[in-house]
Image 1 (tube, one colour):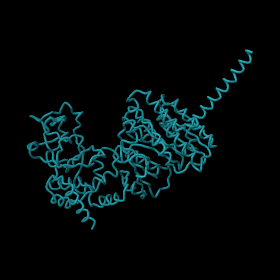
Image 2 (spheres, helix red, strand yellow):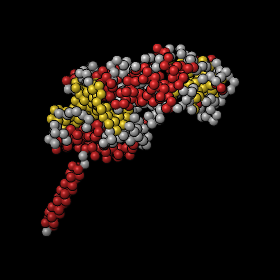
Image 3 (tube, rainbow, N blue to C red):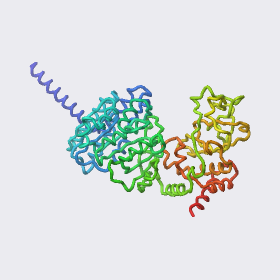
Image 4 (cartoon, rainbow, N blue to C red):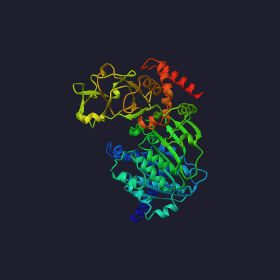
Length: 540
């Protein structure tokens, strides 16, 4: 009797266990690899100390963004070898697997290679990759994976070194696809990261461009890359070496930008202007690029157009600036500016960055002007198209001590055009110019200091002709210049390099502009009508 009871209990237990296993399998099937990555990503982030991930430049990819990136690949057939550097918990790899397994033309096989340095993510990353293997098995596509742990840069740089043991086989079988959301973090000149990337052939100041370069180097010929990154690499001197190297190896096929900076990574409070780049490795020039944009994830409100490749990356441009002309009207704006007759050098004008870096000259700054000081001008002194100095109650200093150690930080007092160095895309104007004149409280000083958050237009280090300065400021404050600047500016800086690269009206045209409106006018309609009339005359 006891034996019969034992057998009965065993049967019931076995049935109950089997039912639970079936339920578990059902749950696993119901949760896709991407959904699993999203859930595990939230768990991983909650387990880390607040502020740790932002300090490390870690911003995990939301599932909607991951799906957007995965859907951009043109094809994924044959033996697909995917690379995901800085994989986090695997959301991008999971999205890629779901995307390609859902296509009519499926891969013959999938090999997934991921790199991740954060130990807190590794276990969850492996669970997501196991889910990808199961998904591949269910679709009849053999799938396997490799997880590389530890220092991403060191491991990837070793692979691209010419004398590395893995280099020869890698060249024969490089990666066919790369998908990335690289970490965004500045790297110091003497840091190990900087030295490693230098070994790999790239001089760069931010980790994300280093990751892009290494992935490009590891791609097979005709290999495809999709990455979401800050837009900051598109212009400016800091990223020029990257643009030169990267776009010598990769050809753009599509760029997607987001009109709002705070939607994609809202959970991480990221206020960063991002874009998605789709590029292919090869030496066959592309004739066109697809440019698209949306408020957040693409919807019916998105815009897209195909433009000539040279419209985005002009081979004649030594600055290798990436232009994003999202509207037809943008072509007219670019044509208007590029059709103007002069460079700054033709006008005898230079533009430089303010010499006073306040945190380096802290002991030489004075809250208020006094004996033995000269005016120190910040953006805070801009007011209604003029410079108002001093600014009582300002948190910024108003004066610089006149001493031998500050002599090289000053310029002769005179007429200059000042431009703010930092503005955001949400501001009404990206280029904000003001004429500085040695009058009123600013008269009677032999020298003046311009703080580093300002650019100043000058003639051989000194002042400009007053009418020329007025016409130049009007041109810089015009809507056409603002629209043109927004096409290529990918960050909050208005660099002196960018200002040098623009074209300008002739001296005669600038003088005529100055005659059209009262000095220091902020009447946008008057400024724009004057500049538009000048451009029309120039185009005849």
